[in-house]
Amino acid sequence: MKTSTEIASIAKIVGMEKAVEMVAKAGFDHWDFSLFDIARRDRITDGVFKTNHPLASSNRLKFARELKKIGLDNGITCNQSHAPFPVRIQGIRDSLKYAIECTAEVGGKICIIHPNNDKSAEENAEMYFELLPFAKEHNVKIATENMWNWDKEKDEALPAACSTPKSFIDHINAVNDPFFVACLDIGHAEMRGHNTTAVEMIHALGDSLQALHLHDNDKWHDSHKIPFTMDIDFAPIVKALKDVGYKGVFTLEADTHIGKRAPEEVFDGVCEMYRATRKLADMFENL
Image (cartoon, rainbow, N blue to C red; front, side, top):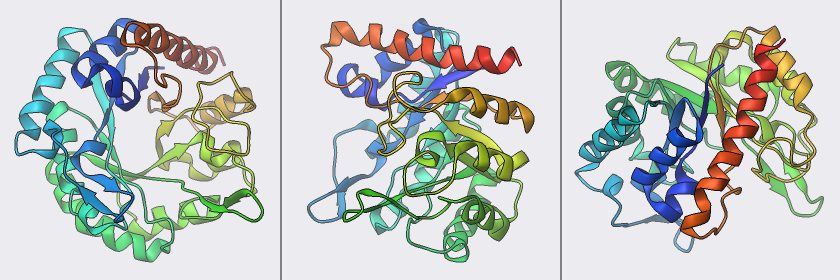
C-alpha cells in the first residue's frame, strides 16, 4: 500500500517546491497536489480574490511541470489533486478545468472536486457532466467527496452532499461514469450528527471508492489531525478497506498538523505525518 499527503499545509511555510521535496524525503510514495491557489475564496465578498501565486497565472502549467520534476528527481509522483472550493462560488467553479489541466500536467490520476454541499445528487451531476468530457480528454478521473454542514444550535454536523451512504451512492449513480469515482474523507464520515461511520461508507461505496482523505478527529469536529492522535478507531476502517479490495493510495489530509511551525521545524512534522500514514498502510498490508 502506497502513501501520499496533501502539500498545502507544508507549502504555506516553505513553498510548494520545498514541500514536494520534503514529502519525498520523509518517505511518502506520492504527493497530493493542493490546487486551492488557482482560485481563493474571499470570505468577505464570498467571491474570489486575486493572488500572486503561479497557479493563479497563465504560467500554471509551467509551474506544475516544475513541481513534477522536483518530485521525479526525488523519487515520487503525484497520485491525486484537490480542486478549489466551494464550488457554489462561480469564480471557483470557473477554475475547475484549470485544476484538471494541472492534475494531468503533473501526472495525477484523480482530481477531487467537491460537490455543492446544498445541492441534490441530480443538481451536482450537472456540474460533473460539464467537466467530464474535459477530464476524459486529459485522462483524469473526477472524485466527489462526502461533505458536512454545521448546526450551530445543536453544535454538530448537519447533512450535506454525500454525507450519508445513500447520498454518496446517489451522487455516484446520478453520473454513472467510470471517470467519476468516490473520495472518502474519513474524518468527515466520523463527525457527530451524520449518524454514519467510515466503515459503513466504505462498504456502501465498494469499487467506487478510489481515493481517500485520511485524518483523525474527536468524532465531533473536522479536526484534520494525524491518525492515532484523537478518537477515531482506525482498525475497523482499515479492515473495511481491505474487505472491499481498496486499490487506491492511503492519502493523508492532516492539514492542521504543521500549523505555524518555524521553517526549520516543518520537516520533523512531515516525518510525523509519514509515520502515521505508513502505520495505517502497514495495518492494511498485514491483514
